[in-house]
Length: 338
Image (cartoon, rainbow, N blue to C red; front, side):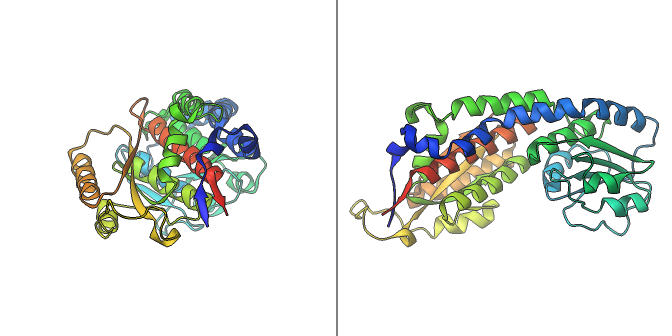
C-alpha cells in the first residue's frame, strides 16, 4: 500500500536524498543565462548575416522540442511555420526556407538534408557535435549550447528568431529571472505552509491528476507537468483539451460524505483538476475553464491552480513548467510504500 507522508517534505534527511534533482531544478535560470551568454557572439554574427538575406518563405522547426517553438511562434510568425519533430524534412523544404534545429543533446534532426537542399539553417546545439558537423555550410549558423537543457536551448533559438523579426519577445534574462523566482518560492528549505510546490504535492497525494492549460503555451506546460507527475508517482496523470478532460471529470462518482476515506486502493483514486493559468485574457479560455470547474464542482472534484501572470509568454510558460515539476518531485518524496 502506498500512502503520502507530508512530514517528509520538511524533513532534512529526506530532502537530502533528492538534493541532486532539486538542485538541477533550482539551476534552471542559471542555465538559461549561461546559454544566452555563450551564444551571444555567434548570435550577433548570425543576425547580421540574416539581414542580408531575403525573408524566408517558411520556417521549419526541427527536433524533439520543435512543438514549443510552434506554440510560441504560430500566432506571431509573419511567414508560414511548421513544427517537424521527426528526423526527415517535409518534401517541399528548399532554398527559400529557414530550418531552425533544436538539438540540446547534439543529435541530428534532418540537418544534413536541410543543408543538401540549400535551406537556411540555424542550429542551437553543442559545438563539435554531430548536428554541428552536419550543419556546416554557406547558409548555416550554429548557436552554441552546452548544458543539454531543452528549455534553455529553446530560449536561445527564440531569442535569435525575435532578433530577425520572425518571433515575439523572448528575452533570456526575463525567462531566467522568472525561473529564479520559482526556485526561491519552491526551495526545499521553505516550509510547506508557504511553499506552493509542496502545497500542490499535498493536493495531488491521493488523486489521479487531470491537468489543463487554456492558452497554447499553458496547454504545452500542462502536458509536460502531467509527464513529470507520471514519472514521479506512477499515477495516470493526463493532460488535454477541454473536450478530452470533461468526460473524465463527469465520469467521477459524486463524493459521498459518508465514504470511508481509507477504504479502497490506488484504483479508487479520485481525479483532481489542476489548472495552469498563465494570465491570458481570452474569452474562449475563460469559457473552457468555467466548463471544467463547473463540472468539477458538480462531482465534488477538487481544483488546484498554478498561476503566473508576470513576464512575457515564454517566461510564464517556464514558470508554470518549473512549478509543476517541483510539485512532482515533492510528490515523489512524500509517497511511501508500506
